[in-house]
Structure formats: C-alpha cells, structure tokens
Image 1 (cartoon, rainbow, N blue to C red):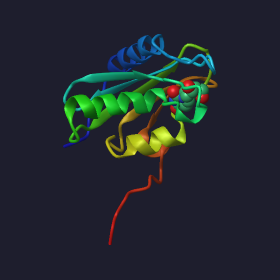
Image 2 (tube, rainbow, N blue to C red):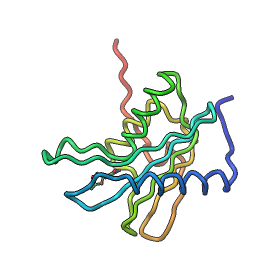
Image 3 (cartoon, rainbow, N blue to C red):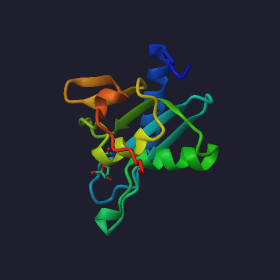
Length: 139
Ligand code: THU
C-alpha cells in the first residue's frame, strides 16, 4: 500500500528542485552548496538547503533541513516516497550518515534516493543507502 513506483520524469523534476534549493545555501565556510528535495506520499514536495554556522558543528545539512521543514509543515505522519540531493559544486554528495539516520524514521524503505555520485547521478533505494538504521525500541 505504501509502495510507489515513480516515473523517471518525477525523479528528474525532484532533482531540479533540489538544485534550485541549493542556490539558497548559506555555506560561507565550506563553499559547498547543497540542496535536497523530498517527495511526500501526500503529493507535496519539500526542499531544504545547508545552513552553516561559524561554530562549525552546528551546521545543518540540506537533507535534514528539508526533513524538519516537511514535519513542521505537514506533521509527524508524513512519509517520504523519494529523495533527491544536488550540489552546485560538481562533486559527489550522497546523503551523510546523520541525514540517512534522520530520514529513516519517515522514508519508505523502497523510496528512490537520487544523488550526485563520482560517476554521475545515481539512484538507489533507501534501504540500500542505509541498510541497518537504528530504531528506538524500549523493552
Ligand atoms: N552537507 C549537506 O548539506 N548534506 C550532506 O549530506 C553532507 C554535507 C553540507 C554540510 C556542510 O554545509 C557542507 O555540506 C560541507 O560539509
């Protein structure tokens, strides 16, 4: 019921929106401009960009910026059916480990993740991008 097969056109459009988001990047320290776009099962697309800080460790990545926007706008029941990441630096940028873990609570396991790899744009399903997500389960 949660499975969604998305046409390539939809992924291309999502990637374009991620690229647009990267133009808003606040990255004076690294110069690395990242954008992310999340397609939700409610049909909405939510974007984010990286926001750096002079206290470097406080920086938030584009993917997590998009995620917190999505939950803030549409609530805790959202499900992500596709993720796109882009950067304006012609570099590889798969989502970092922290972003993978954060996404894992909301993303469908078979959601496509599109990102710039060293050999061009790559698409993988989320469960291959993060095979062993931590899940909080209290006994
Ligand atoms: N960055 C992202 O936005 N997403 C990632 O998945 C990895 C890294 C940002 C954080 C920082 O502003 C810049 O890229 C360099 O690390």
